[in-house]
Length: 217
Length: 185
Image (cartoon, rainbow over all chains, first blue to last red):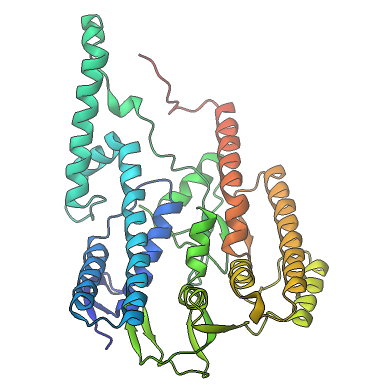
């Protein structure tokens, strides 16, 4: 009873096509996305296809359980699994929301200035949340402090006052596939860190058997 | 990452149980399990095994590596080598803790095993500290460490990465940089 789910994906030529995943693989991908989001200092690409498919699976399973007869053990086992998957999903979404709240002006700026083909870092719901959050903060600052300031000081530039995500921070990476000739240490001191952020994943503090394949733009 | 979250991931590892009930195959989202027949060993994820054990529906079998002699060999090997040796399971610490807490009656020589695993853990964490120390002293940009488990990384990882971040900021502020961002309101 393993169904297969169609997921938009990319093949090695960079063309987009449906990638067929088993539910187990889908959950695996969700957990990868969760771990990547937890360890990365910046908001990563949003994965709407994974989130939607996982929610579909959970709803489907809930539906089955509602209709099933009172076979105690099977139902409780299924419920436990559903709770586990739900936990990972919520934790993933919470982590993203936390980063959106922390970096909201930069996140919105990036969204405004991205190109058509670039994937968005925010799902539509997250985008709405970010805009509302920004509006709330602006109103709050205005009502609590700014309107009481002398007229020439009543503006605050949120882009400059809210700290940017620290793209130079150290991370742990786990190498999933062998990659040759990754350049980690170019000449100047500054470049050493920047090379982590742009392009394919670099082993930074790289641990070969476990953790994280982090790809960032 | 929370240690509890690392344990959460470890709970997906498969272990062998001997159920005392019967149930036909179940089709979980993460995979198929069973069928369950009394007395016949079956592989299930750890989270399910622990739950069934708590409900007294099964007996747990220790994993093949959870044996005093094997662990003694592993411990001695780890003490001899300067680098990290491969561990029998990427979640050896969590598996040991959960199995010994919930099913010590199913595991022979549980106390010795606990001590041995603790010794191995202590040795590895000490090596990690030395390695982190030399990483910081020599101001390396990256380091490669094989055979570390997530729990070990997690124990020192948060502190290490933050300390390195601070040091990086201090280092780069020594050089006058064009993109100095400071508040000039």
